[in-house]
Length: 344
Image 1 (cartoon, one colour):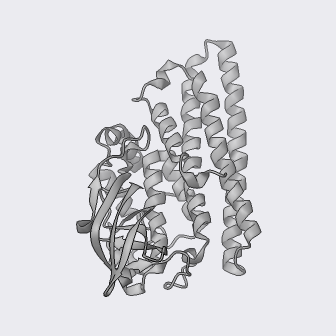
Image 2: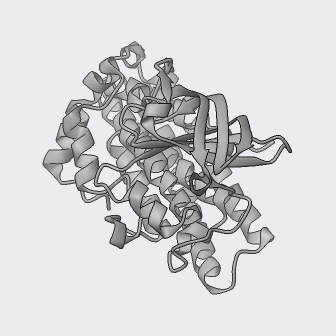
Image 3: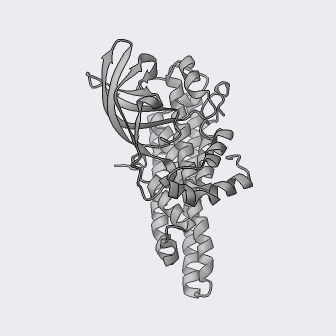
């Protein structure tokens, strides 16, 4: 589904450890993402994107995360930012998103905006802004004098990046803190997600419920990482064939966890397709949004349980950070930490 060929997949996986060490993707891997437009899945074809329907894009996020967690996360975050193209005028969206390497990096933590002639003066600092090392522009939310929160768009020269992303997983996502001080943002680079999208009305994704869109995207990444974890755990379990009780226990546990994950994945994708179809026909009901959200939550909860159930039984070797299984485990827990995958 991701359209990456075996040689490209091998390149990504072979460079994963080095990417972790350097805390950034290699230029060669980043170029693959550009070539396959994996960061432009929801951009109209007229602007050089793939204009994928949401259910197909979720499969791509899943497949990318199965290949490598960092790629899956950046695919979801990078293409997730495409959603905002519908909130700019078509002329502005064309200017921002048409380049082959166009990538929006953003954060939802809020800064402060003051109205001025022709736009706003914005200051603030925003954590967890994935893709800071290769973003071509940035967005972040800020509240104006009336407490109204909108999203503001910054050019790279306006932004200071603090390379403070020091998480134990997804190390190469460059999910750093950004800040701006008295940055001028013209009115045409300000948008309000609480309002309907204004352009590309034929692109249904821009009017899909945003919170469900985001939860679906992150859940698909968690699903891909869970599938990768099971595959690597099965490989690791082959070393215990001589220990019959242990091998039997692991075989039974792997079968159980795989069955549960497959069932939840089927449930998740069924809701993804149903919500997409209903959105295009009659619009989404609150009831269906809630049911689909619960399917994403269920997938996330199972991922934590799956990792917790299997990891302690896979020997001390997998506690070493340089193993593939350890890296997948850390990436899985880090991706699954996103607040949108929690229900309180």
